[in-house]
Length: 219
Image 1 (cartoon, helix red, strand yellow):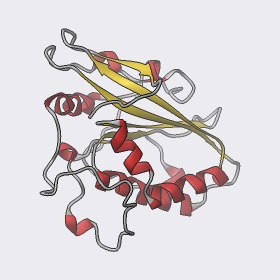
Image 2 (image 1 turned 120 degrees about the horizontal axis):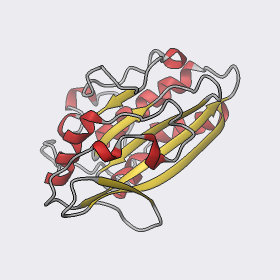
Image 3 (image 1 turned 90 degrees about the vertical axis):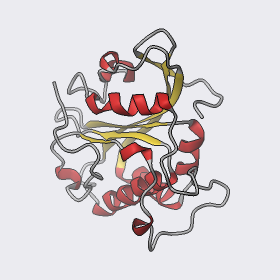
């Protein structure tokens, strides 16, 4: 099966753009926000959705999310056709083991896409890079994973796991994310969003994936 051999704590390199040959897994170290020295020359954030982080810039993470963060080091797709199968069947969820006494839910966002022929615009990859840094700076991102287009269908998949829906909403309202979404609408023939709850129940060591049907998720 497919796996990612690179350091999962290293910020993703978007410079390869359309030449990406293997999936990328990114796990923000301890879920902390980006250090202050990486925040220079950034546009002001939307005051309606301020970053959800501690004033000390120390990691803000609950025990269950820390356990998930550790388990996700083993996160991988179960098939090369991950962009065309249900989210619950695409990855090795059943292999992620957490302490039985913990209980929690997390918010997942899935992006399925198919690029238009000839639309390998580097500006989109640049926008994705800035949007990704913006999301990390906002706080609450547990995992970011993106694949490569299927050689036959052209379909691709990327996914994020957040500590809460509020964290995801705050990040998605920021200017770089909005710009990336607008460019994506021009560059992709197919670009769809799906939302899920990742659930861990007390007494079980596994997580399960459920379709998001409304309301808040996580905290």
